[in-house]
Length: 239
Ligand SMILES: *[C@@H]1O[C@H](CO)[C@@H](O)[C@H](O)[C@H]1NC(C)=O
Ligand SMILES: *[C@@H]1O[C@H](CO)[C@@H](O)[C@H](O)[C@H]1NC(C)=O
Image (cartoon, rainbow, N blue to C red; front, side):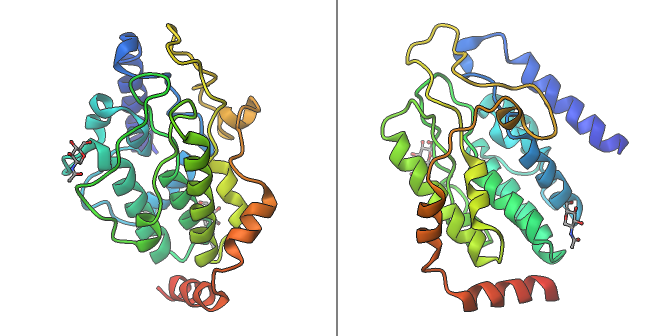
């Protein structure tokens, strides 16, 4: 518990320290989905952390701040993926589908970027160990080019991966982000929130924009084989 508070304190300090130079990063929103960060921390805590990765909040920060959570790794653009991969591995070993689902959703969350409308770069230096994590990429700034279509595709892929492990596919909608900010907004405030509440301020403040309808999710997962769901769940439960 002490250790956890210490890490959280560090993460918060890192986030606070770089909040001033607005040009360095977009709107702070790394705590918007605190509900998912909580699942990630639980998932990671069920096993070991061989690369000494930092708190999951680091994976949602821009490169400069993300560097504080890299542990033994080197690429800030892959930290979100690597944290998700670690959490998924540990949750799978623990046979906990809730925590595995949390890791999948985390992988799809939007990451802070330098300005409103700027998309974050893909992780291209490492491949996730878990194919379920490797299949997913992060939400893009809703004000960036083509974001609505890109983010919908990400959510439908996420729903399929959740279905494949025997989770609730509609949970993919929890990865949704905010309404688009105004390009060139001098405050870079967008429509975001970043206060820390357990349910996630994006939920508490009713700011989450769902990327797809429930029917679209159902249609997307209808092709996911029941046998693969059963096999993966059984596998997770057995380990
Ligand atoms: C899975 O993890 C959640 C969140 O930590 C916990 O509440 C739940 O009891 C766990 N389920 C099992 C079956 O261990
Ligand atoms: C990987 O991403 C980095 C950072 O965006 C970029 O500079 C580099 O060219 C990319 N490499 C490949 C092989 O795509």
